[in-house]
Amino acid sequence: MEPEAKQSDSGKTSFSPVVREVLVQNKLGIHARPAAMFVKIANRYESDIKVEKDGEEVNGKSIMGVMLLAASMGSKLKITAVGPDAQQAVEALVNLVVNKFGENQ
Image: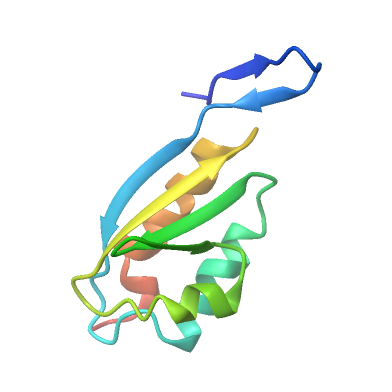
């Protein structure tokens, strides 16, 4: 399901946001390596990506922003993407988190 594109009066195309919530499941949470993996995947997409934890929202394409969330195991993240590939971006990022960033713990 692709995000709905709308043409505004100014002639610009706007997209509906795609939003998913996911729990951090790896034992060490989002430390440097998982944050780098998250940002690397986020930067593959054209869409704007935001990540929110406990009301604090950061740019999902910024390593510093993602690390500053200090998301530990059990933290709930809200991933929001807006753009032409928002659905694919959110799915890829949710899969990364659900699969514990490739960690065994």
